[in-house]
Image 1: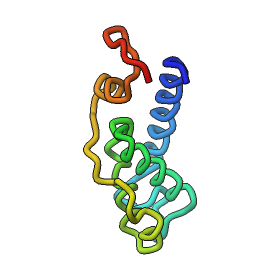
Image 2 (image 1 turned 135 degrees about the vertical axis):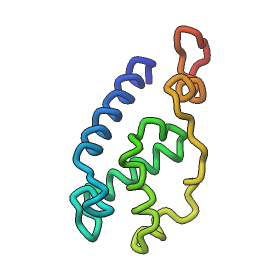
Image 3 (image 1 turned 90 degrees about the vertical axis):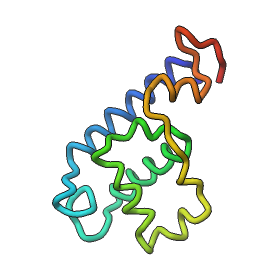
Length: 113
């Protein structure tokens, strides 16, 4: 994957997660649509957020929806799905830190992926 392809996917992820953040109102309940139980969208978004966390790219996740990850992981129905996964990784916050950790070349970095 080229640097420009990675950058494009990072931007796509940011846009997607920003749209989800616009839909989510935590005051309505723990899930995106305010339901008592997660919908398919809730689960898919939470798994995506958990994966971003796992690979230390959680800086892409808007703070407003970061809780969705915990909502799914804490749900009894998901306990077996995520057991043993590395979800306690500390995440970088800045784009530069994320790029440097992943070895993505920038104007000041010559590392390769």
